[in-house]
Amino acid sequence: MNISRKEFFRKSLLSLGEAVFSVKDALNGDAELPIDVPEPEDFTPTPQADQLAVACNEFCLAKNSGCFACMERCDSGAIKLIPGVGIRLNPQLCNGCGTCEYVCPVTPKAVRLQTRTTLQEPSAHQAELPSSKGETPC
Image (cartoon, rainbow, N blue to C red; front, side, top):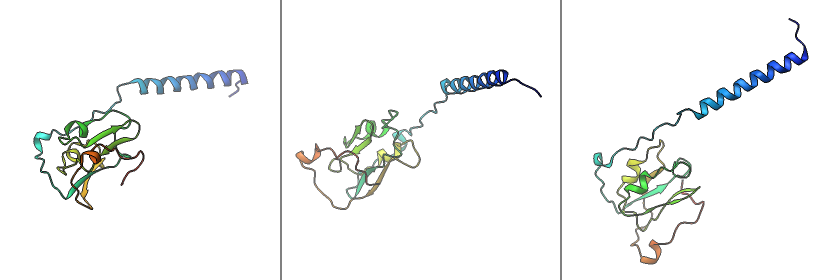
């Protein structure tokens, strides 16, 4: 097979252009997967004083995509969103009911219950203090 350099480059660029447009079409398609959030009607929250919810933001969808399932269903208001970082949990407000872990749509869970190290009564001043940025117990 004999082909000129000019023809070779023209065909190369043509095939590269076709590849770019096929990738563009694939990315523009409806490739977004639906987030399957379990309904809390199937779950009975039971506050446990010895349990505390902990965020693992490396799995959390809230930092980039806008999943607010845990925040919307936290009755105690212990979960706050830090844009670009993920969620923060206020240990003084968390009652350990486990609803946030139940409704978290990712696997492994981005919010998990763990045993409290010390039991503290929330004070008004401590309850409003946010955790420092970047700290995570996971």
